[in-house]
Image 1 (cartoon, rainbow, N blue to C red):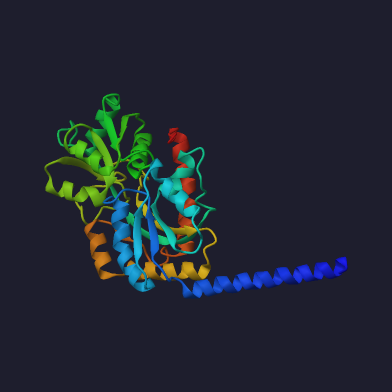
Image 2: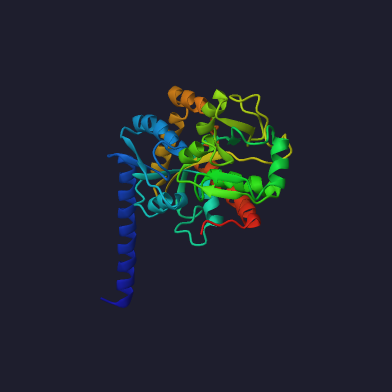
Amino acid sequence: MTAKTYRVSRRTLLSACALVTLGMGNAMASNWPDKAITLVVPYSAGGPTDVVARLLAVPMGQVLGQSVLVENTVGAGGTIAPTRVAKAKNDGYTILIHHMGMATAPALYKKLPYDPLKDFEYIGQVLDVPMTLLSRKDFPANNFQELQDYVKKNQEKVSLANAGIGAVSQLCGMLLMHQLGVNLTTIPYKGAGPAMNDLMGGQVDLLCDQTTQTVPVIKDGKRVKVFGVTTPERLSSLPDIPTLNEQGLKGFDVKVWHGMYAPKGTPKEVIDKINKALNVAIKDDNVKARIADLSSDLVSPEKATPEGLRKHLTAEVARWAKVIKETGVTAE
């Protein structure tokens, strides 16, 4: 066999292998799914992101014709779950739901085991969850202006709880301190539940937390004080509670947005099927009713797309990198 003949034969063989691989990929996509799909959640069962995942799992499974099983993979400020999914087989059977921690992790961690902008395929945004600023019931301030004055004069005495390093409550508190120009004593907990329990028990002073957790406590009017909501507009569920923005913190906007991801290289046909199931799920009457009860907002159809999530994540990575750099906070 001459060298020229070998080269031609090798090219032919490589082309044939590529065609076979493409054919196998197309066959896999057309038959997908033929077993259960695992939806990985970075936080513990019962938490806000877990609640959303379990709400979506049932209608998504009905559309896909296979069960969607929720798996809680917790730890390291919510970075273990994305790492697991980034390294999973890119066959669509392991996917991730994560909140804005996907955008803040690159700035918080010096050595992140994954790149949110390079190591995933995007499925779509899911919903936005507002937050509220609360204090213990007997905190000296009775409105936001009094709160500002008090913390500026007594910042070394004031404690600010959060649900753990990298949690959205930490990020909200960090932005609050940044805009107020104060440095409070931060107390990280292992989850939002313990932080809220200690706030209601009077062991800590302040907490910024999601409406999925705080609205029932606020409405009973007995266990906490509320100083504002973190969105630019007031909430329909709490119409009498002013925003922090309208009370002087101009541009203060923290929404706990959620997105759904798959490992890089997952076939487009599979992503399209998951995206279709997601869009059916966010239009489900039960899902919409439950999300409304949690004072949250399902996203518009144009955001519940791969491109919608890609654009939003890219913008949020840049936004939070600036804030985190200015505050000098890291998770390590």
